[in-house]
Length: 201
Image: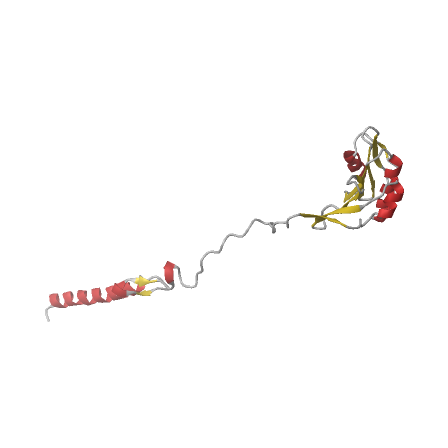
């Protein structure tokens, strides 16, 4: 065969071999040949094989569930820290019923007690709550500002309003604060009730 013909035949053979190897070498790893010579990915949706959809971003650090709602219930019953007989003997009034207001969850204020006469007038109202250590005096003065020193617990404030026949007292012991309201002007009776409550808490 003439030399020119041999050179042309060699060039054709080399071209065919190079094109075949290039088609395999340029394929992206992890893909296979699809119909019409295209490539198909290893998973649906154009995701590379072995990958997963991104998950939702987590909440901010320290995030917690919303606190439960506060519920207040009012009912007739017994005061958990003050007896009805003691109140009657102290204030000299007949008590027909005791209304107890309870706040939930238990971390809220302690029950409030109202000692009610037969005519519907509240003879004695008592409520208590916890205060931070060392904050008792400030809390008592905030409850009953402008009063006189109260000789109950570790101290407090008492204010008597003779014109309105009303006495307000706030006293504390440790981390407990008690607030007493009477329908009469008598600091002595308010002090006795506050002492009894603080001793019973």
